[in-house]
Image 1 (tube, rainbow, N blue to C red):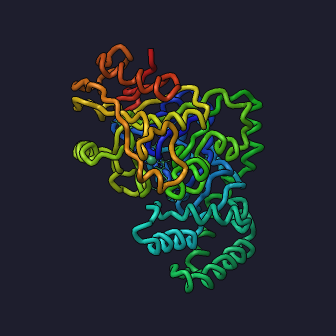
Image 2 (cartoon, rainbow, N blue to C red):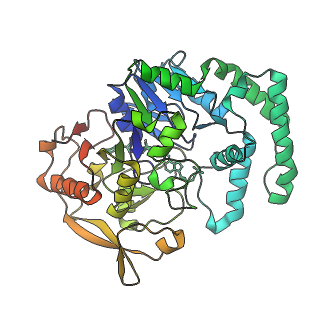
Image 3 (cartoon, rainbow, N blue to C red):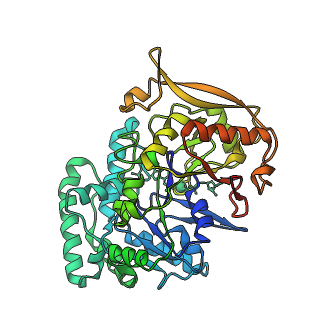
Length: 420
Ligand code: GDP
Ligand code: IMO
Ligand code: MG
């Protein structure tokens, strides 16, 4: 499986695409179209939101598993976008009937709640992800399989949810939803999506039993996980290794490799604690045209590599190897700080604190590494990297407790190589 070890946008899409060259199937485990996974192939750039990144490899089949939440109109738009670019999805893309639906009233709740929170907002993508997962946990959600119901029954179920939403909307300050356009939109999407529906768990197990090579694609990142992230500044799904098993129905004993994707520095979109955040680094990276969100276009907050966080992520996920991306982002720097501990009231913490409010009071303890001050983007082998870049990477690997596997020095497929 392939997972993010920071706050999302680590380069999972790119690493997935490279690894999918040797896979038969890619299963997307969780999350919704809050994700944006970028893959650059030559001059073509694709940003995938719900469809697994494997779709760009013609020999690979894809499953959006039951742990994901699916905005039907959003998925139809994404499928059509792929078709317009000559990428076939029929017979290759499968949608688990178990996946929950994200409906327009979920978006209204997400956006309305954020507005109400004002300064204290989470900074969500506004895609309705939290409210859709909340309905799932409250056992009132609709699932993708219900798109196969008769038009009248599907409409009845959606109308029912909208009626309840509109009753509460006035009190909560959420936007009310007019049922007619929603019903039209969902019925249209249902027609298009029905042929993609399947029992996601049966499919996953059949694929595994037939000996096919499967990659599980995680979305978001470890510190956006609803249990293990910087709560409440998190998303509403389980973005860690356990969540990938729950989301797909693939048992933990079937997992052979856990590839943890991470940047050679740190970024985060949205609000919440970020101990190593550094405006100067952000300014530098944004000036290079980098670190703008793939889903919302927001400038990502940037900071130094946080080994305290990543060490936790390595343990939580049982990472077997690291896929380190964006090393080239540090090419021009003379000195590179790496956070090895948090200082709190004269004490040094080696584990991230539990409470977001405590995070805010922690200060980073940095170890300073010498920069290499030369481009790495042309490197195609470990030995091509400057000695100081190699030392930096080996030190990070030691600090976080996992071996280096894949290295990435640019967005392109070819700018990727293995350690050693
Ligand atoms: P994901 O959500 O984890 O798939 O990551 P995103 O696609 O949201 O953001 C990662 C960004 O970094 C994308 O624009 C990628 O094209 C880009 N990227 C990935 N690896 C590298 C790398 O090694 N160097 C550079 N310069 N860009 C990279
Ligand atoms: P990928 O898969 C980065 C962040 C949002 C916000 C928080 C909650 O591309 O790495 P949500 O809309 O999920 O309720 O927002 O989570 N967030 C992401 N940040 N990458 C993502 O996905 C993200 N998906 C959600 O910015 O802080
Ligand atoms: Mg992303």
